Image 1 (tube, rainbow, N blue to C red):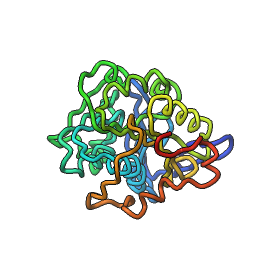
Image 2: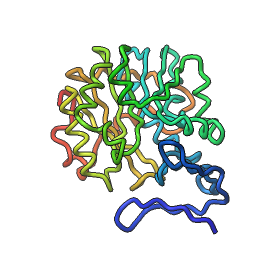
Image 3: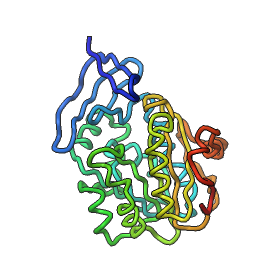
Image 4: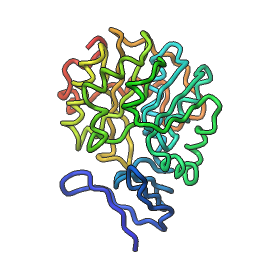
Length: 278
């Protein structure tokens, strides 16, 4: 029997018993594995970590995108850092007023794998409003002259080469690509297993942005079953909630929005005054 596992803590994790392996190859940048399961459908793993599944991918993609998009009054240009499976771009493109989406994904093999095995996500790459750039996102942010209304950091976990995306120097560069009225969404790790990383990332973001708001959402196949995000802005407070939510969503909705930001006590202690204007 085939067995695939991801270790989440010191002695726990998630185990899959795939029906079959669909793809397994090392690209120039990482190990890419796709397999089929009865519970989660197709699963994409990069370097041994679950990135998305057919069954629960919508939790992560909707949670990263919609709370952020809802706090910009008129998002026209959106930058996605990472996002090689296409799911984040798909959610952004649900907004008809978005004119341009730039996805900066360093690994073209991830995009090709998504196109073959996760077409419901990767359909976004065929959209006329989207430009796909295969480049190091840190280099792109440092060199581009374009300004964006919304930036979504759909990057890998802050270990190894991806650590650069969570350092103060990168956030300083990131502020340079933002319009005066802008918002940033950051995937911020597991509040169960990665509390030190989450706290450090929050403090780093506070050094670059005037407003930083943490929130959480369930993602069943991610460590702890819950994931943290940061919504940041160079403004002293967030623009008002738009309440113009696209059709066809599976997780996010208007009544849920406030609840995502209502942190329970075990998380509230990680943050110093996590409110607008912090």
